[in-house]
Image (cartoon, rainbow, N blue to C red; front, side, top):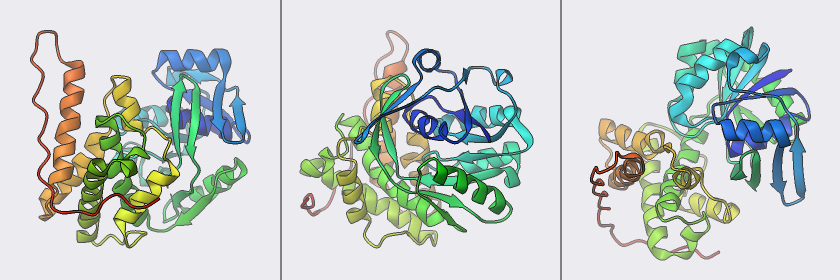
Length: 328
């Protein structure tokens, strides 16, 4: 199988290294520094067991990539539309695209460009931190869930077999909404707070002020999910987020990495999306709304024109009594 890997960051490095064991992988992207690093030195992934590496071809123009069977979409949520167009260009007529992106919306974009029968949804709790272009550290192992509902069931099974041969743990499910929103509970509670306060994931459990905020966001996001009839894969959203923080304590969230690099974040597809749905269905989400506005303000400040005054940061609303950080 030939795979087009759209994404040159930490997750692209992780999947590129492991999929290269079992398939022909092409890395396609726009980050010139990463493409040059991979072209010159290959991909490198640091794990607790040692360092894994792979040599794969790279391209910055989809016209340079030979016809592919599968496109794996690992770009930021706001880059999905371009990635979908590129996937359509590099895929064979019967090829398919799989998104493992964060947030809400990427699948619908792929379906609009490719068709519902060629776009698959996946979710993973795996994480990685980019140490340098083409060089990442594994932030935590975890399963990959794939949607196996019609009309993509046959492709889902084929992709699951491929991922398992590459060493990933895979589970097929007809309905991924519970898993998608379960991950969203963690992402909305962890990513913006670690990014704004510039701390690794585990610090949320060590600082009572940050944990109170993370706890409140988790409860809000879970409330929005349940109000839509989504059955979450856990009973206690706060305990779930605490467990994720423990398992990925040393990891630097993708949003924190984005702010370090002065890049746009996925806040619109995370807290912004939760706040928007909450407004539509009548569920209050003041913490999600505030974090969304705060991160957008930081993004704008980092890219504002010279001489333009910085935007005022959002003020977090007062929070009621909460429990302290959980015991570890």
